[in-house]
Image (cartoon, rainbow, N blue to C red; front, side, top):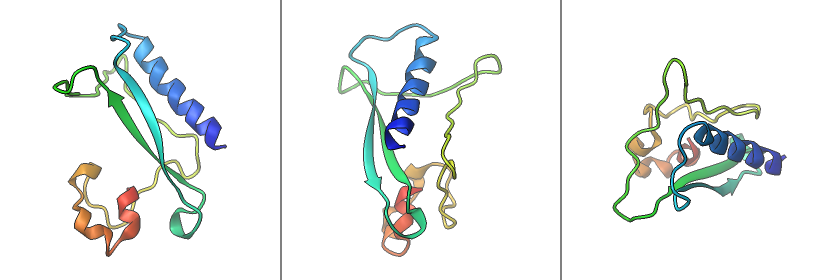
Length: 110
């Protein structure tokens, strides 16, 4: 099942980029299996990290966007599809203060 989910994620990301102009080969998306959860609230789930590898250290990604005609959609075929910690009040995980991970360990995987 993990391999199937990984394959689907790779296909989704690579196919969404292949519809438009191709970037240089030095730019690519990498997936890292961060944690396989075997117990507790997250049992049976896997946390993945996604990275955009770029050519130069000064390169940056300013946006991932879509439009009405070509929406940018990130979907999951898993059940449940995405994990949302009940204490998370931020839209973006980067806005969550890591100091809360001690009190709410699963918040790290939001």
